[in-house]
Amino acid sequence: MLVSIVYDSGCGHTARVAEAVAEGVREVEGTEAKLVAVADGAMDWNALERSDAIIFGSPTYNGLISAKLKQFFEDSTKAAWSELKWRNKIAAGFTNSGAQHGDKLNSLVSMALFAAQHGMIWVGLDLMPGNSSSTGSTDDLNRLGSWLGVMTQSNVDQAPDITPAGSDLNTAGYLGRRVAETVRRFQPA
Image (cartoon, rainbow, N blue to C red; front, side):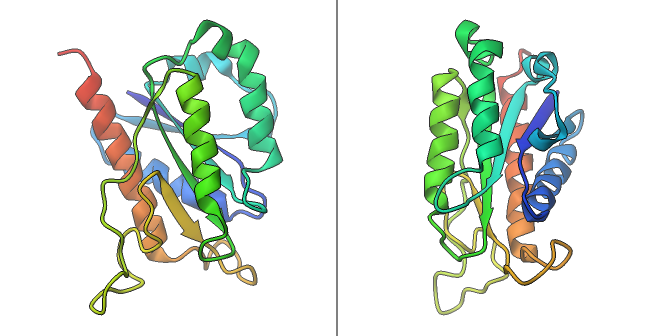
């Protein structure tokens, strides 16, 4: 099985989250994770068509996905959407911002809507919100409390080797495993 992780990363923080998602994907036996940075140039549309799942990732800037991921979305119209080449592929998403909330939900909604327009099947998180009680901790999975996809937070004055927090990266790995396990469930016997 092939899971492609298509992402943009302005300062390296979202790339670190993408790598954590890929690590989670690889924990499921027989699954390959392919990282695809949209900023790297020409897109291999055939490889995306061969993928069993595509996970989208973007920093959240001013409550929106990055311009580079949006350009990828627009470019996919001719390459994939017009013939619904991604129909019934599993899809999921993740986003990172400097603020705890930062209107990241809007970025995930944009990704989910994009996937729906391609006929994809969206997979969210099946985790209760972490750090939401007196016994909770910032070390909990899903500490920012999202169901639609993974939300992570990076301090704007720290490099990607320090932030986002380990719990956010663990949540990203969890999403990667969940997507790979979901793909497996949809595979013919």
